[in-house]
Image (tube, rainbow, N blue to C red; front, side):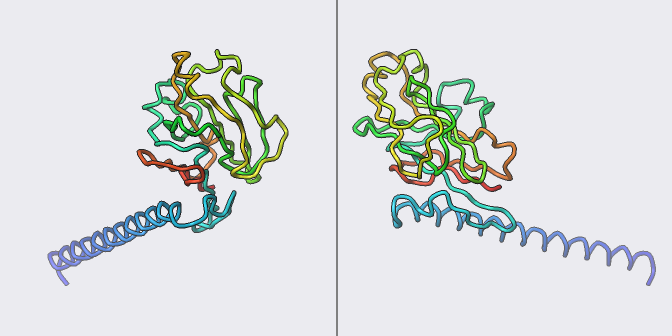
Length: 214
């Protein structure tokens, strides 16, 4: 085989490898889209809290879902108007514009309450697997000093997904000229394999809105 034939053979092998890689990438992307669709459909056709605090497997990693704590519509962190969150300094996550006709705020995961200030506007929860969730109700609401918030939990309490954390008067927040967007992040996102947040969807309490792989 002369040099010209050898070159043609290497070029053919390179083209075949490229086609194989593209097919593999397309198959992976398709499977991921199907999985995403199934997750979203599951929130409508299953019970409100599916596999609470679950440990589904994704390859060699554990998959954990974080559920919506309120009724509303999700938005990107960049749309919350809260720089410390929109910059992702406090982890990956999502904002939720609340439906003001519902006052309850519920635990998005099962775990231990790590922080629950008297102001009632924020809650830190750590799951058994070590995922750290920060739930922040409103922007600037710490200045309300607890007015419009009624806590149902304290630091050290163990909660199950769906347990009520607080009752919130969203109208009082708006009346005080603060944003009522509720923000939820995985504060230790950098330690996770992957954190995916579902943006621009309508949610009920118990709809999966963050997917954590660790």
